[in-house]
Image (cartoon, rainbow, N blue to C red; front, side):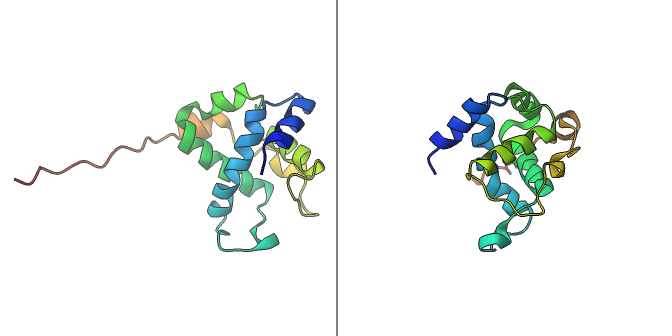
Length: 134
């Protein structure tokens, strides 16, 4: 998918940085995997707002670590409902699909950014190497 239409939506709306829109699309595969639907086809791959938030949380933790909240806030994303606004802007533009049961309320009170990204951050340390074989 060309990101030009996505970037155009972001610029036209003006509330959130274009990078937030790009990140959302990059997080979809993670959300589908976390929801256990990677082998599903068509509408069965659909994730709910809560599942999408969880996928974005996981993806942001992997990429940005404890700086994820700061990055999101620099994009204008200050609470999870903001992701709902991004999603529904993309749905209105025909760039994302939704189900009749999907609402922006699915994104309310998803999680606290500081708690999710800073307080619960556990760094992945490299596996210790054993002694060299001689």
